[in-house]
Amino acid sequence: MVGVVSSVKALWETRIRRLQEDEDEQRRKSTRGGATGRLGVGVWEDRAVLARLRKKLQTEDGRLVLRIEQEEWKMLPDCLVQLSQVHEWQIHRTGLQKIPHCITSFQNLLVLDLSRNGVTEIPKQIGKLPQLRELLLSCNRIQFVPEELSCCESLERLELAMNRDLDQLPDQLRNLKKLQHLDLSMNDFPAVPDCVVALPALQWLDMGGNGLRRLPEDIHRMETLHTLWLQRNRLEKLPENISRMKSLDTLVLSCNLLTDIPPLMEDMSNLRFVNFRDNPLSLDVTLPCTETKDEDDREMFGREFMQTYIREARKRASAVLHMHRVPRQSPVIAASSSSPRRLPHETPTLTKRIRRPRIKESLTQLLDVKMIIFTSCSLSFIDG
Image (cartoon, rainbow, N blue to C red; front, top):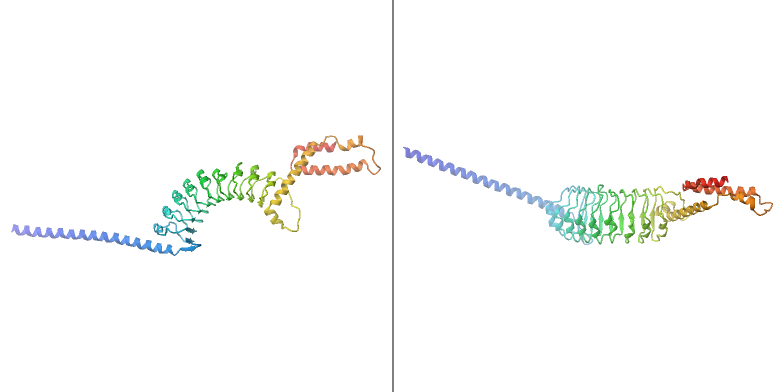
């Protein structure tokens, strides 16, 4: 009887063990199947995204361009590396927050245009794009520019306008030997960075809408610069060396705090367009009337205004110097005591009536240029 019970017990134990082994195997198979399923879903998602991106490819002037406009792409997928033959990224108004590190796979990239997004930083990997010619990142949230950007030796155009909190550039950017176009407008720069002055090929610079209070004294080192935008800053004075910028033909200085124009600027023969609008200049100069030019155009182009202002300032300075050298003795009294005998119609009264208005006109000119220091001398001259 005992043997029968033992046999039945052993049989049930064997069945239970096999049942547990079968359950464990089924569980393992189920787990493997779930992972495979999830992997399959990921593959299909990547394929769908890649197919969507391929539809954004265009050919323009022999270049393959990835163009995405006004669609939500806060992050670019990793599968983008499969489109590494692209020459240009044109991605605007997508809410993009980050430039992917896989950017280094795009060795043929010539233009990276991510304007009007939410990009917060430029990755250091940007320096590994030796063919990159244009980096356009205006209207983003960039606060820092990495020194690795100086390794983009082919860079010709850099736009960082309207990033608001951007206030400095790494000095290494002076090594961008081919950079011709630089837009730093609508940021928070307190001065023109030294590396900008040192750029050897720079032709176009916009630093309007910053907090500039002065320009560098060695600004004439920018020998190739032909266009300079400095509107809406806090400039109170221009350095004399600005007149030595022989290539400069466009200079915009509107909406600053300038009170004078350097006289040497009169010799800037290449300066074609200059704008001094909305500055508290000390002299009120009116251009002579003409029938051939529109008044707004003349003021906007401003070269004629600048030359007229400099001539008027020189004329008034000369008049002040002349008045300062006039003897204190009244010429009327001197004439009455030692003048030769006059003809009947040359009366002293007439002489006084002619000379006094001229003296008053000189006083009016002195007051216009606010030369108060000479007022007492002039008054004593009249009273005498």
